[in-house]
Amino acid sequence: MSAKTVHYPWFKKEDIDAFFALFQNNLANFVIIAVTMVGLGFPASLVFGKVIPGVAVAVIVGNLYYAYMANRLAQKESRSDVTALSYGISTPVMFVFLFGILAPALALTGDPELAWKIGLAAAFLSGFIELLVSFTGNWVRKHLPRPAMLGALAGVAVTFIAGEMLFQVFSIPVVGLVALAIILLGVVGKVTLPFNIPPSLCAVIIGTVLAFVLGYQSANTLQDSLANIGLYPILPSLGAFEGFGYLFGPLVGLLAILLPITIYNAIETMNNVDAMAAAGDSYDVRECQAVDGVGTMIGAVFGGLFPTTVYIATVGSKWMGAGRGYSILNALVFAITAVTGVIAALSELIPLAAVAPILVFVGMSMVVTAFDSNDRKYYPAVALAMLPYVANYVMTRFNNNAGEVVQGISEGIVPLGQGAMFTAIILGAIAVCIIDKQFIKAAVFSLIGAGLSFAGFMHAPELSFNAAPDYSLGYLCIAILFSYCAFRKTSKEAVASPSTLSSKRVAS
Image (cartoon, rainbow, N blue to C red; front, top):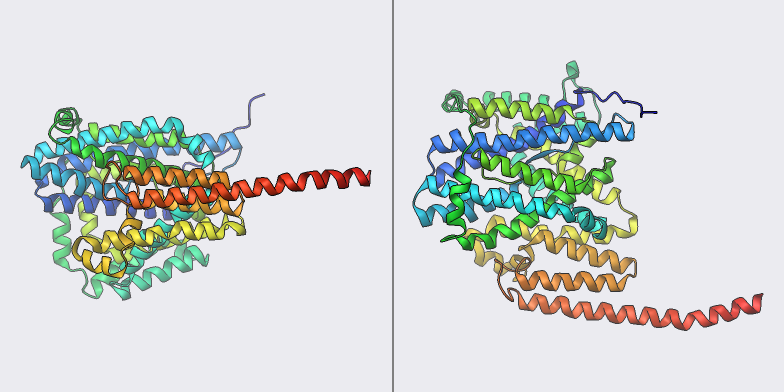
């Protein structure tokens, strides 16, 4: 007998809220890409004519595939409350590509077109590496403690998502606080809003109207928003393959940046898939990493040069009760907006303070999930895994222009923030092993930390031989300490065993 087919709706009301959260996240990244590339010296015709449509292709492909995966999971588990994975441009990786790949390529070549092609080659290679990494995804997921992975994600959520967006809320307090109150009422408090309007849509509309009424937005803003409207066809490009000659030639040093950030991206996807499993929807992490890699490669073929990932916002969408419709709608909207230039218009028209509260909620839900989905005894491990991202936030936000100030606060801030994802997982995993008294595993994770530090994945600004010797030595020392603890534990158990056997014989 064939399994019963479950009615899994293409779209439902809850998808609207989740769509706005996902769309805003992707839209913000598209805007950052456009503004930054133009500021670096790339012509607007290249940015809006090739880069934005190319990145949109990657977003479209991934969103549609994850909607397909959601339907497959719904049918497999015979339930209709499955939420599709959120997908888009990886924000941390985007910044690395902008300032670690594109900017050096432009500085060395002096040719925006050539620098773009080098960036395409880097993106294509990054996607291919993540595709290869996907073959080990489930094994890594099985052997990394969940509190460590979710704690690392909670660190990202509380700093770069909830914290950063809360700053934006208070940048225009009347707009931001009203929008935040609407989100809290509708999503957290479950209060029905007038006309049953979705909270996210209500927050955006009310926030934008307030911004215009109070003078934060003006008629000039509207004119500026319409300036980039036009027709930008999505066309394939061979630029990625032309860029390989330079990427493996004069600019081979960029590979030292590309490799760790790609591994980070694969781990980010793994963590976010695991967070979704904790929330109730379990997807195959290998397939997700492969989709992210292939999506990035397809985007590069069409002119987009920024890697993609499963978003941390997925759990927020799950909490909103979304299905697959928000993912499909996101793909369709980005297809239209990228081709017509509406992305640039919307980014000018809607104030960030009006949409930031949506992501504040997403960050809140991630922190709650990190604790709620783990046993209480693991709370210290979750909290410890969150802390490296506090250092990472301080380092990335202030170190460029005020490195002396940061170093003056503490010499440990910068090295703790470097490779924060790896550090967070290693420290969280060590804490979990100590809680479970699995000291050999704690020693193994310590040795992995020593190796990552030695190669420069952690506590160092770049990959190199013996990149962070003090930290490598520190991790080696605690590996020895944990090995000694394991020896003592084994010795005590060996001594206790004969007496236990004797007492059992006497009792018999």
